[in-house]
Length: 253
Image (cartoon, rainbow, N blue to C red; front, side, top):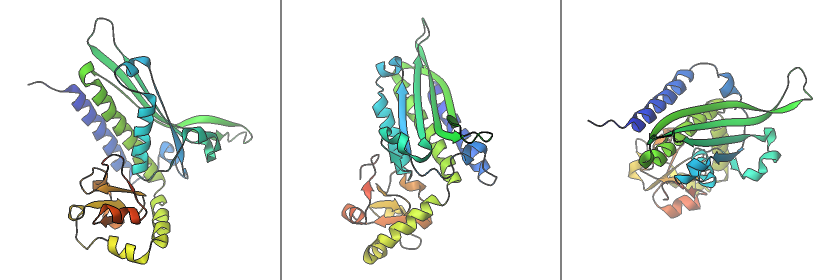
């Protein structure tokens, strides 16, 4: 029986991420999680080495994929050139490095996702420096034929870990957006989009979250993560658009 090592490594990382998230949900925030508290928006930046580009990756594609994942989770992302204007100059950075050892068919790759922001020194508040306050790295290997897929999957898992920590540090962000969107929505729209008690997303063509500007197909992977109390359902695509939602870039409803 042939064992797919990339899938095992990806599953192991996912288990580590989910275990860490669930274990910390009942405890105080870690310093890394606490550093994300109060962050209202950020920019995304990506870098990849020449070897990564040779197997089909581009820095802009990586950046766009990470930005889409953050936006689908309700996190506000600004254009990269705006990083100096943001409070704290908050930047999520993604780096992809690929190595091919001499006389080997197996490629080794290193992925890193970190969060960089400007902070002040406690002993000298006049001094402001850029510091990495959150980071996660991943090393793995695999044949060239499956390398692109494995790297993309693992980047998605690393970003999901950041999203979980961000949400835990900012539990009220979605509630604030929910109240604002609810107040601005037409009365008849709010009545139509409220799901029936006991209903599931599968009974409607499209779904969204009260805390997000995005709507999804009912079978989209991101739709399944929306909690029941925040679930908004729409019978048609036009109804979702009229309610002020934009299409998910992943499931393209």
